[in-house]
Image (cartoon, rainbow, N blue to C red; front, side, top):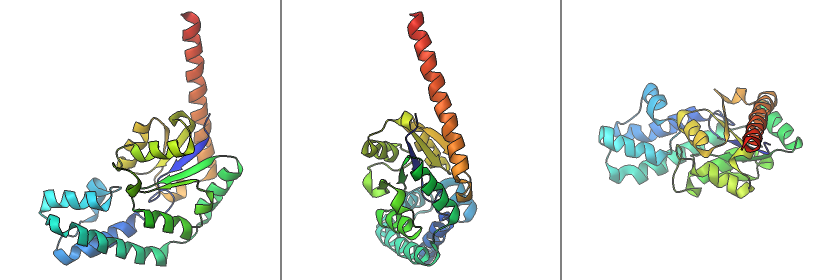
Amino acid sequence: MIKAVLFDMDGVLIDAREWHYEALNRALDLFGMAINLDSHLASYDGLPTRRKLQMLTKSRGLPAGLHDFVNELKQTYTYEIMTSRCKPTFTAQMALSKLHRAGYRMAVCSNSIRRTVVSMMEMADLAQYLEVMLSNEDVSKSKPDPEIYLAAMAKLGLRPDECVIVEDNDNGIEAARASGAYTIVVGQPADVTFERLTAEIALANAELANAALAQTRLAGAA
């Protein structure tokens, strides 16, 4: 049965995808390398900043020697935007508080850096509900690799079939599905409601029960 809910952060718990895009473009604008929104959504959304910079080096010739500078500047801009815009929201607080009271364990797993993850969760007043908070600095491979979700499960002492993962973008969805957990796909933070999550958990539990029944029948037939 499902015991834990693992969340992506940007676009799931926090409406911050635009903040990261804005911060990165402010840094890239210094070198005439800004990314238009359509390109960002199609190719870069959900990836760590360093991965985006590597892609820009290959596709547009951004000097690799600038990666550290642009990355640090982007993180500075992200923090400035975050401190002015990141606030608690009723929907997220209600969903996580009710899940907590219902006995579910929770984690956040983000391709953002650790300082951003911890700061956003604290500013949004969600850290109190999370047993585990993982960033791209806690794994060797970022999403779409499933490592971050498998690491969170290991910290919780749970199997993939005891977890659901809530994701919103292609890279995160690929990572979630590759982990073996039941995946809930949302379009925006407003979709992350207690009612939606518990309905999906009920579906996951039903699938698990049907799979267990099928195994029992196979074993009996053998």
